[in-house]
Length: 156
Ligand code: FES
Ligand code: FES
Image 1: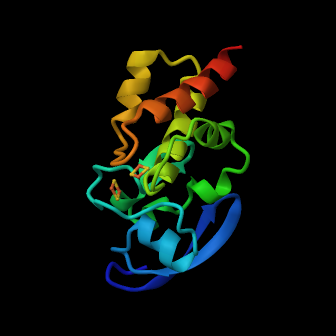
Image 2: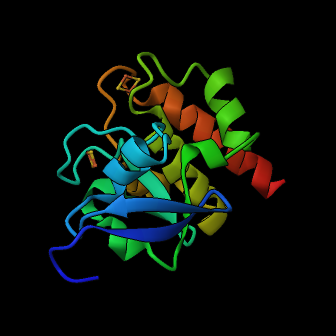
């Protein structure tokens, strides 16, 4: 693809090969939402600050507003739509860890990665990890409880 051209790329998203017509400057976030219909990753700051747009790239949480769609070629992308029956999703429900819900998919994706990468994370690691995401509603207490409940399950 020439630098300024629009072209079709193939992305591996939630275990499926998906095609998208993109410009080199298109953000992964926008392509996921506008072309692939995956609206769980939310646009908010589009500046890397809020984490509402977080997806997994090869298992690591990435802010999809900071990644070009073309950079995702050859990597495995998981969005909130690809997490089905993950323990953390039920934990957020059980602990009432959301109000408006706008931040929730980003938190769940980020903390799903935390539970996999640091299943025995201590409080300091959890707090540091949560700095990637902002919530304007909950005050974080319930979110923290939801995460702890999943991590304690991993420990048992
Ligand atoms: S929209 Fe991506 S970090 Fe805020
Ligand atoms: S639940 Fe509203 S921003 Fe987090």
